[in-house]
Length: 249
Image (spheres, rainbow, N blue to C red):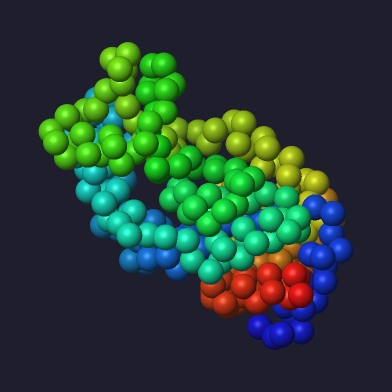
């Protein structure tokens, strides 16, 4: 990565009418949140079947016991990092239209981003399967710690983490909004994602096909590296603040 590449991308972002950021696990791992799918990822240590929607329905008490363990490993002491904060600064200044994220940790909101499309939901919430009411996840996890397994809504319905479990589809409204943003983007900034998990990985492809400038910031090569106008193989917490400073200078 060179300063010239960052400055050139910053110039395109300044001049663009619609810039969309797309973030993956590499943005969260910089905050100390374990990766799910990497070589040392969580799904190499946990059985994915334990977090399938059919297990929630068949064995809700067991599901919630395992979910509590997973949540405490995922969210303990995690806070926004410099990449989250840089994207929030760019949005506040009017240079980023929205952040589309594969992450479920809620750290974009915590950093100050307001237009956030969460393709896989948000682990800081739980939802009732019957009435749809949503609650703060930590208060529900505290009930689970106290022995309420499974936790239920005031209406009597079963509560589930407000995330996409194995066996569930991505939320239609979020995916449609993300597709619309991708197709209308002048610059599509893919950050910290392997760009290999469908259907979300189709978003940068759609943007590039529609003529958007595709910029990829990731430590490793991605399937779209050879099609990206900018392929920055570097730490997102280094590149994003530098990029924001260059745009806002």
